[in-house]
Length: 162
Image 1 (spheres, rainbow, N blue to C red):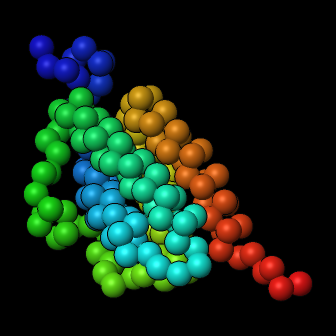
Image 2: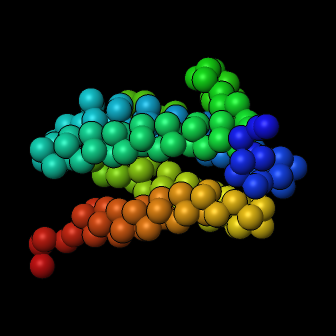
C-alpha cells in the first residue's frame, strides 16, 4: 500500500495540493536566501534589531521549507531539490545588494503578502481535497505570519518625531 492509502486520501484529489505545495516550496527557498542576504548585509541604525530578527526569520523559513518538502512526500509527490529549478518557477524573486533596513522590510512585507495569498489558496484546495493536515499546516502558517506582518508594519511605520 502507498502512504495515501493509509492516509485515506485520493491521489487525484490531492494532485492540485501537491502542485501548490511545490510552488510554495520554490517561493520559500528563494525567500530563505533573500532573508540570509538581508541578515548578512544589513547596515545602519536598525542593525542590532534587524540583524537578529532576520536570523529568526530565515530559521523559520528553513523550517517551513522542510515541512513543505515532507508534506509533498506524504502526499505522494517529489519535492524539487535544485535551486536552478526553484528560480525557474518561483514567484518570489532573488534580491541582492540590499543593506537598508527599510528596503529589506518592504521586500519582506511584499513577500509575506504574496506567501499569505498563496497559503490561503492552498488552504482552500486542501480543504476541497479533504486534506485536513495541509489545511492545519497552512492555518498555522497564516496565524503566525499575520501577527508577524502586523508587527513588521508597526515597526516600519513608527514616526518618533511627533
